[in-house]
Length: 478
Ligand code: BG6
Image (cartoon, rainbow, N blue to C red; front, side, top):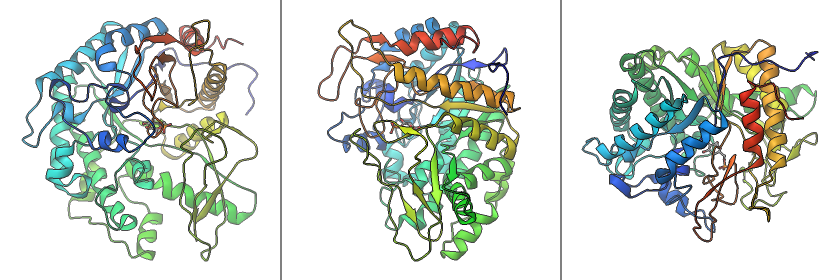
């Protein structure tokens, strides 16, 4: 529907931004934190820097929270580092880890900023991987539950919004990118066991949150990429639905309905895949009732028909930030992804598609009718400080304006959206492109080649977003 007026946001709408521990904190060996698998993974992404220092939020958190308050935030979505809280297999809690997050949370609360906290954003402790078997061994379920309960007990008096596992679907779809496939010999089959174990961890976290946090709400964080059919050819529509099922819908159905859907069960049967689902597992999954869906959305995809006798083609992300390197994957018998001629792209070939935001919100609301928050959305770009000492990120302003406008349109369409948190507040480490791909509203002065003074510089987008927030989504700065 086209509306006669600009969108309106609910009076209690939460405006903020987003980060993840391993990408923002640094301080990886400080105060008892032990290594995470993602630390090792980040060292493989040369020539980019690793996560040892990142934005050094560990030492700058007070300054960062003060900047959030200046911007007018009412929420901040961040994650806890498991190996900072439980550094060893013995399960003992690291008081220094608790202290750091207590300080951060207290600082936020003092500034009226609601913490939205992710339990797991890729930092599997090395001890859990090496001594327990990581996601491949069911022993991880108890270890994860213990960690989650420690977090709920330590922070649940002040943190009421919790997120279980970040982008479980993307971790399974693109296992090697984040190192989740470490040690696997037959990923295409083993990933479904890992996925099932993650589902059990998610379910334990949901139930523990409801048991331990008074008034606590918890949801999963799927990565969502709307998928359009390439044409009105009926086979393209089915291909788009196949892609939707295999990259996102089967996870969302399970989170909401507590069951593996018929499509995925049939897919497993066709491919002789038998995930290790044990008695009691599905009852546990079904008992975990989520309170909302948190969604990460950056871009959209296009799918077309792909005959079973086609050749398999693996997805190849653009790692250099020079347009034209993205290789769209082909899954014979299911779908082939392809470029969208109707939208522009970033330097990393990510589609810039604000309408995808409205599509996603409509799709999720239509299917599941539960409240939704946006926990990631953003524009990654090469950036430097200009000669005038400022950072002029007009493209990011345009990106955010168009995306947030579509959030507003979806609210007008009837979707219940409660919060918007773009990626990211400060610049931070990209999953594969170090500090070269910047997302922040705040510039952090450091590079992949050398660590600089790490000073914070407010980008033009900071000022634009601040005006929008302070007008509760009515000053679009046009
Ligand atoms: C999301 C992840 O999928 O995408 C973040 O949750 C990540 O951790 C973000 O940083 C952007 O991706 P990238 O590869 O540009 O850092």
